[in-house]
Length: 484
Ligand code: HEM
Image (cartoon, rainbow, N blue to C red):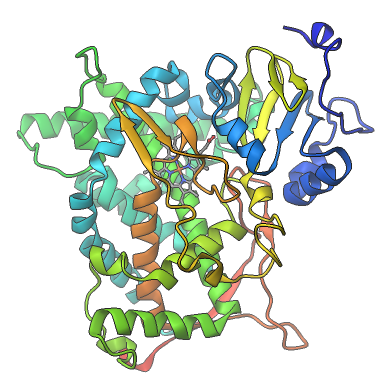
């Protein structure tokens, strides 16, 4: 239905702009949280603005989260908002290239591989990967660009655990470069200029083809060698059947693997980096985290870091402060700050009509900075999450219906409802292992300015996932007991 018809109805307030078409793309693109907070003050928690000719209607706060994450499929769809960006990167037959009901089944196939038994087997792998990786660093570093390092580590750990041993074996040769080329195609700008003959798009398409062929070859080899005992996502996709008894095509399996790799990579690596920046800015929390590890793993809070025993999945689940640090970091730096759906049928919200053709948007980044729910919201204070179940989303797995029980919450870094993240539990295991081991081995600090003040990196909103603005340095020193 066009806005012409809807104009007779009560549309949400419109945020003014001066440049037609471009609209408010610049203030939103540069500092989305501040821009949305400012709009909320002026227009309330539901308003519309123009961005590159698109009408973006935001519903903010816990009510807005609930509405956006639980909107009915008949009214608004994620694929209408995300397909232009994701289909060229992930490929066809999966995710936003298929009906949502099919994608829900594909999500379940991935989730089926992410079991407690699998996680238990991942912790030693994650430990080995992180330990080997830290060995490659010099004993001391200053002006150390943290994010690219953490990206490298995450691609090693995630590919080793999820993608399959064959991919991890090939990582040094080409997978990291392929990932980089695919990633170049994953910029918000591509939604608007997908017809441009940019070199980045050719590189993306070439990388997509090589990556797909790599997975196809692995599938062929596994079948030829009857190598079916793998506990990875790839195997789960190979073994699973849709409800109608059909299986995913090999092409679709390959594309789903690319999608899982892309979904987990920047989200996890940026979170690991932000945890380290926040801790470097709050050294007293590092002291408490090391005490917590010592207490839980040895029963003696004074056990020094180099004498701590190996981590296990059960031990990681028993470190409440570490968990709280992770949640507080995700509150302040959610990798995905806005979620979007395309409205396909007019919908009513708080007395307004949101017409078909609008993009319906929610922002966890805004609700997570709500001063009523989180007093002094800019302060890093992990104790907010101690003794709290907030953010421990319960899953209702009813057939293929995967959804969080309630989404009327301020804290939703992994989303909610049918599009909720399936990688949360893996991300927690991965990030906790990396951080716990990093803190044992290194002392860390932020760089200082001329006045001796710590320099905390700014947030970079220009790419799809919020990252630390480059260059984002730390300084670190390996503890003497760990020195090479
Ligand atoms: C969905 C965040 C890691 C796979 C989502 C959504 C969010 C999110 C906010 C909802 C998007 C929406 O509603 O539009 C995160 C964060 C992560 C993380 C913060 C790490 C710190 C991962 C990992 C994987 C993954 C490791 C893969 C193993 C997915 C998938 C979806 C999803 C498949 C479903 C998309 C949909 O249904 O439309 N994630 N994610 N994520 N995530 Fe994650």
